[in-house]
Length: 240
Image (tube, rainbow, N blue to C red):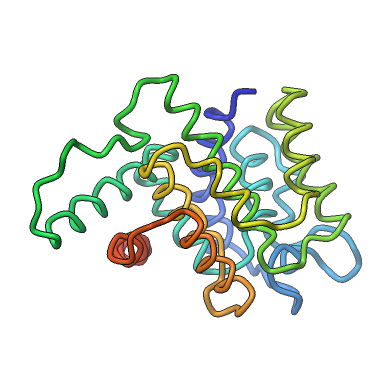
């Protein structure tokens, strides 16, 4: 199962979402979350209209649009596109690590091995963990119903015909939300930081359910409190 190219497309598609938002009137339904991208009639509307778009960029934007559910995420998606997709998460994590270590007043034992600074084989490992975190965060609002799962799986199928990846996505979308299960994908502290950044990007912290999920995920990822704060700070700065 290869996820690197797919995840990079999804992250870079944030720019398409931003441009589409700015260029037309796109309204959310009152349900919020993933449901907010779909009209009450059951047909896709707003950002969901990108589902019928032609070209990889439009397809990726449609898939990412289904995973995203609030204005803050669309802003972050655009900034991530400027940074350069998957590598952006590494850039943010690396900077957060540097600031946190400086605050501790201790010299780092080694340079943080974030996704933008590791060999290709390790990039794939980081990518799979980040994608797992993104899918889980999309479910944190509790609004992912069967119809939305089918739409998401359909868009991922258009982007990537990898059968193993499709089976994995189906399983991830249908399993109960479990922060501990998500956290087990983090093989290194840097992967944990990147997964947390991706999750912060996708959740609406004004939602009690989503904020609670994020807090529990940070606990399960065993993030140091100071590092957690710095990671959140770097994401907020990326939105500006």
